[in-house]
Structure formats: C-alpha cells, structure tokens
Amino acid sequence: MLTKEVARLRDKDVRQRRRAVRKLFEDGDPSAMSYFLPFLEDDDEWFVKRALLAVERWYDGSDPRIAESLASSENNERRLLAARIATRVSSPSEMLRELCEDDDSKIRLAAWSNLIRYDPKAAREGLTNEDRAVRRLSASELIDSGKFTEEDVQIIASDSSSAVRRALIKRLSDNLGEGPYPELPENLLDEVAGSVEDASREISTSTSSALQTPWIRDFLRSSVPEVVTILTAGFRESSWVENSDIVDSVVEIVSDPLLERILRRGKGKYVEAACMKGIMDQKRSEATRSRLVLDRIGRSPSSDFIELLDSVNAPAESELAMAISALVGEAVRSDSGE
Image (cartoon, rainbow, N blue to C red; front, side, top):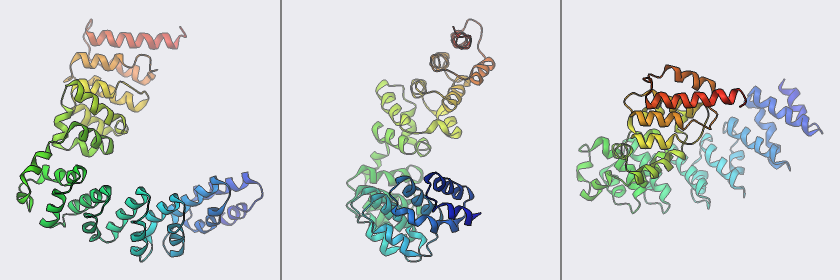
C-alpha cells in the first residue's frame, strides 16, 4: 500500500497527490516521512505544510542533516520545528544553543525548553538570560525539578520581573518553611498575594494551575465588580469549559457574580454543560441559578439542555421555575417556527 501511495505522490494531477498525502497520514507509517521531504521545496504551500507535519510526527533523528537543514533555514516556521525536534538527534546541544540565540522569541523559548530537558544544568544558565520568558521558563523548570540550591532561589527571588518571581512564589504557597525558603527576602512573601491582573493572566495561561493557587482562589471568591470584570477576561481567553474537571472546580470556587459573567457568552455543548452544573448547584443563590437559565435565551439551547431542566428542583412560582418556563417556552416557539 505504501508503494502505491508513494507513486501517487509524483502524479501530475494535484488531486491525486493530495489524496496520496492524506492516505499516508491515515496509515501513519513513519517510513513514509522521507517521501515527504521533497515537498519542503514545493511551490504549493499546502504540500509544504504537510511535509513539515510529517517531519514533526515521524522524524526519528537518524539523519541529523534534516534537523540541521531546518535549523539553518531563513523560514521561522522551519527553525521553530527544528527547535522542537532537535532532541531526537544524538547530540542536539550545539543546534539548540544556536537556536537559543534566534531573533524570533517563540523559537528561542522552544529551543531553551528542549535544551533544559536535554541538559538540566542549562536551567541555571537561563536564570541570567536577558529574555524574561527564558528566565521564567528556567525558574519554573528548576523549581519543579526540585534540584535547586539556595543560591538559585535567591537569584529568582531578586529577579526584576514579577513573572519570574512568580515561579518561586507559586512553589512558596505550598512549601513555605521548607528547605531554603526561610532565607528568602521578607518582601518577597508579600508577593504571594499577587494582583488581580496577575490572577487573570494566570487563568488565561493555565486555568487548572491557577485554580490550585491560594491567592488566586481568594480573588475568585470576590464579588467586587471590578475584580469580576478583570477575571472574566482571563476566563474568556482560556478553554476551561472544555475540561469537566476544571468546570467542577470553577463551579465550586468562584463567586456568584463571576460564575454568571464567565458563562454569559457563548453557546454549544461545553458551555451548556457548565451552565447546567451551576444551575444544579443548590449552594448557589436562586438569583444566580435563574440568571444562568435566562442567559441561554436567544442562544439556541440544545434539546438535551432543555430536557435536563426538567430535573432541576425548582418550587412552583419560584424565580428559578419562572426562568426555566421562559426558556422552555422560547424553545417550543422556535421549534414550531413561530
């Protein structure tokens, strides 16, 4: 089968070549990668991107010239790919160190990330890098590995960037009083309670991690309008509703006003599932549960969502019961074409 599809890659008909590419990806045979390499020089960008994808999926490092060629390319996308696959060759250090000096920040960060994984000692080098993102990455990797010294802690603690110090502060919240931590500058401890803007950024970057951070959880329980507005922006930049475990944590932790705001926009199965968990939560105020129902009006709720509302415990004539009645009524009228 591989021979047949490889032959079609040279067909004059572009449709045949594309079918062959799709079939080779479906088959998932790593030996097909070498046949994609000529497409790196193709005039059709569609084939170029598939060639890059084939390299990323199947490159095993046996021919270091492939990675080296990508690393020396003038194309940013190819150098970024080189940074990602460099550790598959037997001796990637020189290639990665060159990419660590790249003009493109994404390439530098990817190269540093893999260099640290290949050589953990590089994390210590990264702590003094001019690039704040590299220092933050290095600090996080070093702290998470547990193989840090008191000197490392002091360097991170005195960094000019709060984003870098945050890597240490995050660990502090769980390990205060252990190891070298008692020697930290006292003013650093004040940063355990970061700003609401910092909390919003952490939520957008990693909602799961943010939900486990004590000072962020404190903000999440706030009902202050200004705080709610800033945190809402962080949630809307993340894909938290697609993870049921994260949704459970959010519903458990956040204040009523924040829950209403972060679920107000959007539609679809993930948003509906999150709304339903809030509606079913009897610890929530009736006003919030009702608002979660009413906010689905005009958003074409699914029939499954409407059916689940029947199982909601809502006393007759209550605010929640009336909200459910309003949404169901809209759904019926929509189905009847009124």
